[in-house]
Length: 256
View (tube, one colour):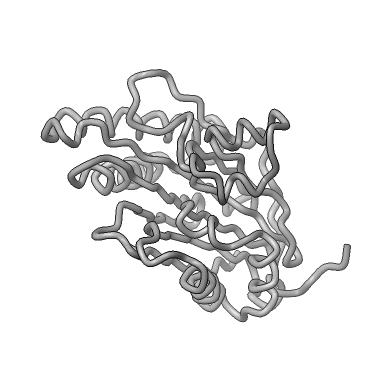
């Protein structure tokens, strides 16, 4: 199974980049991770890098692909962040991070994913959004409860207030898809921090995907959209995409 992978991570209008991402692939199991850190005096970038390195290291040690494995990887990463907090100066001990994880079993051609926080995972088929993860945020909870619409997720002043993140001593409950998705040629996955999805509506993601020839050109188009709409001091933005099969299949629109 051919996998076209592209990665984008920029500091945006901030003094440094607190996002982190990475992946590990083999002939059997593959793992992709994106994390957005938070915390003063450099703590955010330490937290996000700790999450990514922990998840990739643990998966490489045992590349099993299952829903339980994703939850385990994220919980173990939470423990790694907690340990890292104790080695930092007091000012950085409140560091936190999000996590989005995608696993693919190349032997059976299936995918599973999970997340914690507001770093998202999207799936596309036929240049249409097939699924998107749910944010663990105050605004998402308000929208779910009927106290507002989806625009609040991108525009409300409290849109970045999270209900869950890694780096807490409390038990965490990552959202993990229960059943594996059978992969088809042309399937596309996007893992991205809020610094990207806040400025790119889902309809725009679909339109830009249909006009792109490779994973790399699609990320470049998404970045151009961010830069066209973001303020001067905008957040870091990170995206990692995986295209399955022939790239031509990923950009073939399927009529509704």
